[in-house]
Image (cartoon, rainbow, N blue to C red; front, side):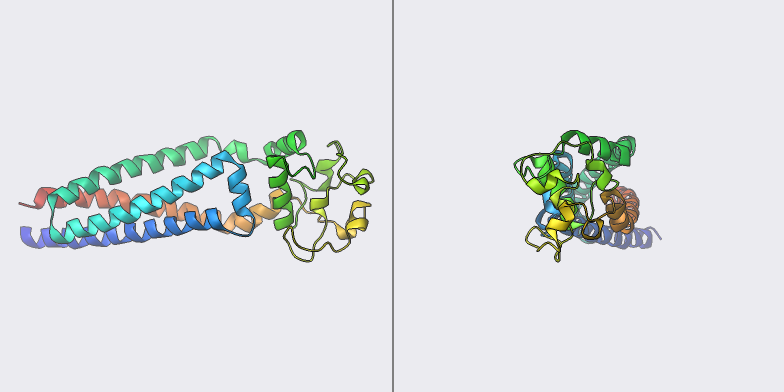
Amino acid sequence: MEGDCLSCMKYLMFLFNFFIFLGGACLLGLGIWVIVDPTGFREIVAANPLLFTGAYIMLAMGAMLFLLGFLGCCGAIRENKCLLLFFFMFILLIFLAELSAAILAFIFRENLTREFFTKELKKHYQRNNDTDVFSATWNSVMITFACCGVNGPEDFEAIPHLPYSSLEKVTATPEACCQRELQSREGMFVNKEACLSGSERFQNRQGCYTVILNSFETYVYLAGALAIGVLAIELFAMIFAMCLFRGIQ
């Protein structure tokens, strides 16, 4: 009976580690996509130190889970106590790091409110000044997502005009809010002159906060579900690893 239980534990351990291996592969792929994505998200990540660090942490965690899942599978099949102990210690460290990250994300979630972004935009945005990282990032976001400001074009009414375009003196709307045939910096304007002259027909009127929230809402819930699933799998894997470690003679 004890041998059958040990054998069952071994294959369950292999199964859980296989899922950790797949989870690590998914995080690794997601981290690589965020860093090399050509649609403009890469510029947002590069301009924000917190997001930039987070992307590389996700990449490192994915690579580590990928490796540990592989080691756990080998340790379970070969019944190697050294590999199992090594696996348990590192998966415990990863589990604690992920749990800490989730707690910190919950604590600092108020920094992602509409009011916070509106305040930062009005304080730091310099319109077409692409030498300013904050302004260049916002321009890339507005062009990529065909949106304007946080809430809409009215966010720019209190922002001073810079002498980059004489047309911008007529309206508060920046050039990045003008409609384009293709949503990229290389895309041709539908009617730039009319847009900067105040014609709402050629402006992107919807705020970026709503557009981006709607675009990523599904992915946020998916990422949350994936994170909970990975934490649960890691917890069970640690339990099975210790049980198998103690059962091996």
